[in-house]
Length: 269
Ligand code: ADP
Ligand code: MG
Image (cartoon, rainbow, N blue to C red; front, top):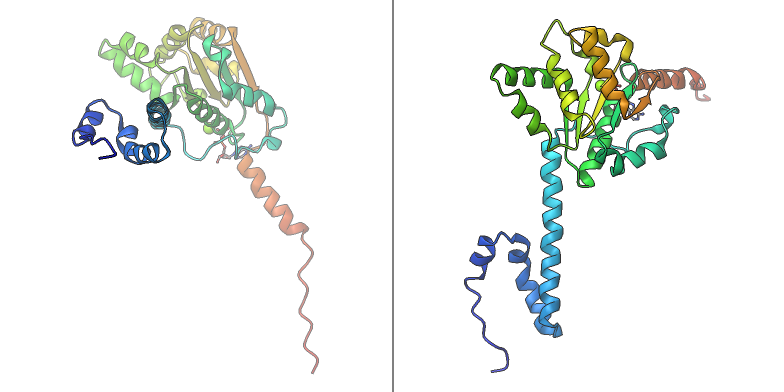
């Protein structure tokens, strides 16, 4: 007998128990190739280990993308940087790679009128960061305030804030929609304090700081919150016309600028 007989009947079960799904799926194919091409055993084993690790990384990114709750379809690839000339594409690309700013807990603050593309760029940066191995959570600020307020009522605010620590970046979309009359917004203040110099926030707002007195319960809290947010922050000014409205205007202009339709000449009789 030339080939050594190996009993592999238990192998699928063992690999399942060890949680090695890629190896479980791929080993028969690899074993056949290895036997045929005479691979050393070490090469066979390391090829399978590499594949398992790569697949594990992909699964983790997929899980983190689901958990991030980013609005779908808003990517850096489909963001039109020419529409926001004051935004440096190189700067955004560097931010989207992560690294030091997240480690230092630097904040990103995106300001601009409705439709300027704040949520789009926030989501696109968030997506790129997840793909680069970071954990991100995107939330409407009003929803988060509500969630934290419920936690506070249940005397669980501390635990709720700690739970958010696992996200290197927390995106708070539309801060200026939060209104102190609607909710106990001091939870927002506590969140900002809890993450200060440790974990980053990306905040989008229609209104820059001057109008934030409507967001926080009192001026002292507002000033302290802004102070902490801007201490280490990158501010993205996006003072442009609404992208949607501009699109509509462009289309309209194109139609009116188009040469008048030729009146069909009557066919010679
Ligand atoms: P904001 O959050 O500032 O109100 P959004 O990010 O929601 O604005 O943008 C409104 C719409 O226009 C979205 O569908 C978004 O994808 C699109 N949009 C805005 N700016 C751009 C841009 N520069 N390139 C591509 N799409 C954009
Ligand atoms: Mg928005």
